[in-house]
Length: 467
Image (cartoon, rainbow, N blue to C red):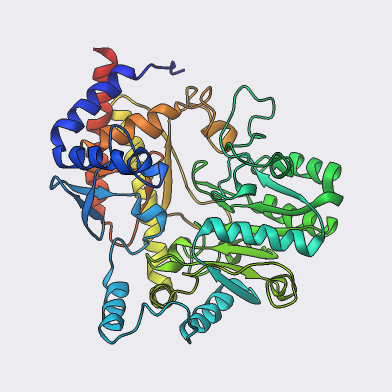
């Protein structure tokens, strides 16, 4: 049994070293704090004492303003499956800009038709409507479901992240003081009426899911879930859970929504639903399908999607930059490449993901910090290119639910989310939630470098704790 630890001194020492070796990023951060809230516009990127300010990015690496060449496993919030700035995307964009195409927002063109056709063919959807972020996509999907069913309740999985939109900002973080742990609004300013409409169930918990439908089935508009949970700990759904979700939603007249913002085109050249053979009513996509540009989509049944059309009553307008032509060009370039090279890309990523998980576990343990990686495949998911690192206080803990991975009484979340990240940054390796994802730009040599960085980071942390 590992004891809980106090990291104030460790973080102080690591922060001092990071500040000494990164004067340019430190100076930029001081300027940023004068004009930007907390120095930036996305909280997860603003690590303390300050983040590296990036000036170049290529493949598996980014280079910051202080000249550090950093091996990156965050890869654009998991969007850059080909690595940073791949030629498969940058070359078509550069050619289009040179020819006078790409920034003419406000018009339609053929590209969005091509992207929609490809997305439908690879996901089983009948209709698509685009927007510009995953948060907007999940919000619109829920609006469509509520309009289609005439119901108000939204069921979600505790720990699931569906973006910074009203129904998504409930049940994200674990709250030990709350009897239901995840049944909690996560933001001030949310209308109570919205927060009260969200019900929370457990991930891969068939009994709890059945109970929620038994008690609330006639009022549930939709059940939205990630078939592969991202920020909750790189956790794949069990086939039986998704099959039960499909059966219960259909039986109770609710819609099933798969949030595939992360999982879409991550594990195959299409939806993860294809691998599980469970077809949702609606699905949301973003990240990878944008090729590094802001593209998101809601896709699904025609009768539901058509509620966003003329006379349907759902104001799903998408925004000024919806179907931005440069974004659509990046999207079609990315998806076609993944489809054309599916047979070699995804098995290779799965092998590299397994290598990364094993390497990190062995390296951290050898450095004195026993850890457990999640993100391995299961019976329905042949392999995975994503991983998170956890430090359970009881090494027998399977770390297979958000109630374990995000519970500070079960896992040392400060170590995985904060301390390890900063210690690895001092080794010129960037991770998120303990690790992140591998891309086609990563090599076995990069994984070896990751392992050595983990070993050194663990030794440094242990020595500071013992000092």
